[in-house]
Image (tube, rainbow, N blue to C red; front, side):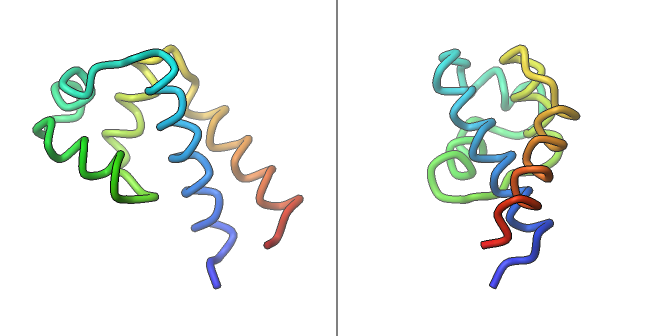
Length: 83
């Protein structure tokens, strides 16, 4: 069973991935901003419910998101739904 912190992190990452797809943000741009290669970004997006903090911040910045609000919303959502 996942902890609240793990569920919140997964929720924030899921929402960030959706934002990346909706805004059609190129993976290469996220890779450049987070200091990794495009394949690493693809691995996290396609095969994981996690991502590095630098990748999360880069994705939020490039898509016009607010990383602090995203994390707060994810924490609040997991408090309401303890699953």
